[in-house]
Every structure is written in structure tokens, then in C-alpha cells.
Image (tube, rainbow, N blue to C red; front, side, top):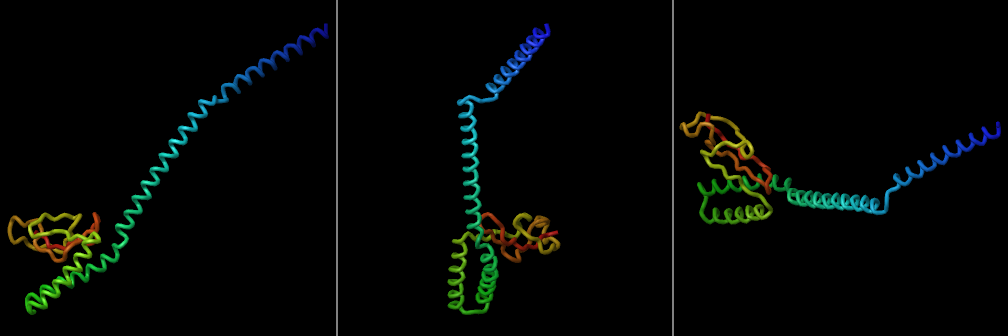
Length: 178
């Protein structure tokens, strides 16, 4: 009887072990993805990686273009002083000088200005009576407006402003009416 109990107990233990093994093998079957699932997963990963790389290439290309566009910004800013000096010299020569001197200085000034324009420098067009815009103008002072229509508007332009590409490198210095 005791042998029979031991046999039944060992049979029960063996059945439990078989049931556990079957459950474990079923888990392994469900845990192991099929070849199609693996392929789909790897394909998705590849597509995402490829898209990331394409975005990286576009971003670095854009950064490189911006770098080259604005790389000479410091040089351009330093040349603006020379351009201003030319403009002042032209005004003085036009008042007091002889026409041939004026013509020679104008020739050099125009050539210098055209070379800077080729590199992307543009003057900001500002006229008395224009609306004041903080994106392009810097108000140096306010004076009483000579007329009602100039209140809050530009009365005088002291210094020309410039852009390099789309970026303002020097704001136009203006006087506004109060």
C-alpha cells in the first residue's frame, strides 16, 4: 500500500512536471516571434533609422549653408564704417570740391558698394514719414513732431541700416516724432 501511495505520488509529480513543461513550451512558442514578425520589426527599425539619417543630412546641410552665408558677417560689419566714411566724403566733396574729384570718389564708392552687395549686403530703405519698426530701426532720440502726421513716425535718418541675407547686421539709427 505504501508502494502504491509512492507510485501514485510520483505519477502525480510527473504529471505536474509534464504540465509545467507543456506550459513552458507553450510560453516559449508564444515568446519566440516568427520569422515574418522579426522581418517586419527589423524593416520598421531600418526605415526609422533611414528617416533619421535623412533628417540629419538635411539639418547639417542647412547648418552648413547658414554658416557660409553668415561667415563673413564680422568682415561686413567692419566694412560698414568704411562705407559710411565714403558717403560722408561724397557729401563734402559735392559741397566744396571739384566735379572730377567727386566723380573719382563716386566711382570707387560704387565699386566698393557693388562688391558688398554681391556678397549679400543690402541697405535697409528708410525714409522720413515711414512707420517706426523695432525689427529694423533703432530710435536714437525723439523730438517734437514737426507735423501731426509725423507723430510716432520717423522724422530723420541718422545712419543707414544693413541686412546680410535675411539677418539685420546693423539697425537704421533714426529720430522719431513725439
